[in-house]
Length: 194
Image (cartoon, rainbow, N blue to C red; front, side, top):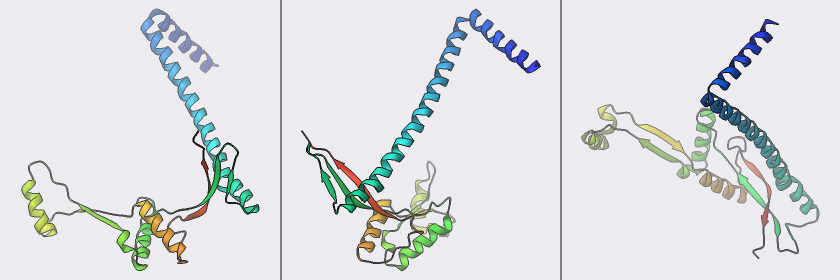
């Protein structure tokens, strides 16, 4: 019961302050407006996420399945719109911060299967202001002087997808779990240009 009295007192004091100070009343109003807008944004984002999920199910599953049942790869409407089902392939390397061992295994697999040339290996060394001479010296002496480079090993996603697609088209194996491999269909909409 004392909590209710305390809350009423705080509410009453807030109203007294707002009524006695027009600037505070405006600030309170803007804070309430922000709170309301953030709530609406959250609600709309949830609605948008649900719509995206429904569209994805139609695009990746339902329409391709229905067209396949009819032996079709596309559907043309009278207005010129074309719904076309295309095979898509997607692959990703494991994230370095979440699965470093899986990432290293993926690089090892690429190297062992003739795809080592798609791996990008950047070595970066940073020098401060006025250290141009050190940078030049480092370029020629590297680790002999005790500088430790930052190394980043990566494969651009488009390059990885292209290499995976090429292997699959040749009937060669690609470990799906290693590259988060997805092979499926997607419905593309081509609208007529009138």
